[in-house]
Image (cartoon, rainbow, N blue to C red; front, side, top):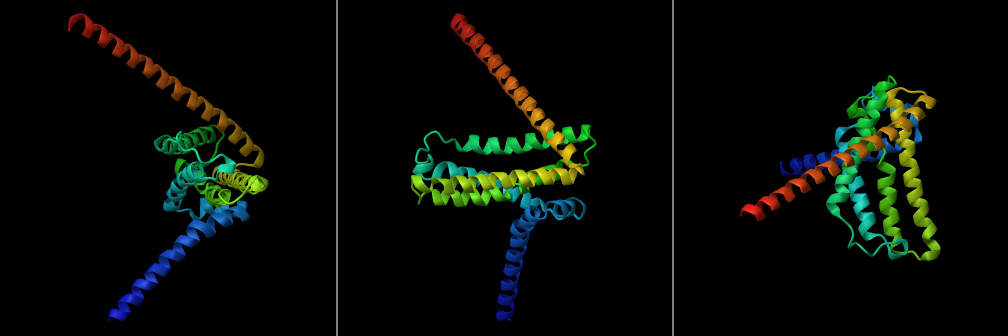
Length: 226
């Protein structure tokens, strides 16, 4: 009986590991190799998984943190005094949220078929190549000299290029756009992102001035009457 339980437990572990490998590695790799059919399945056959999307959002945060804090001296590492963990996490999460909302707004104007959850998953799935190549590049950066700096730059460049590749075809797939319309969609998305960021900065600047004024009035009242 005990042996049966162990075998059952072992088979469950193998199943979960197999599922994890298939959904978190094999399927994103298929999206790179087969960008048209892969993203069509992503939308119509619902091959994406919510947990994979959040996994790569978390992994993107981890990859950026690892790169900023552990990269070798030859590529500008070794000084983490200016690193802010909370700011890094908040910046990545807000960037994904703002990009998702901006692309959905633009897609709605141009008759795009993509929904907010689909766009959100596309963006997070697209982090797949950057995450792993960035981590590999960071590790390598600690064992190379100035002459081998090109290897670090190549890995980071390929990771960034493949992420853009996935995001381009992913947005094309979920919105069911032509290549030309997808380019227009992305251009307008960048414009809307810039507008949203400007409005957010304007709002926080305004709030900062209001709070400063309230604090100055409070101090004036305190000095005069107390």
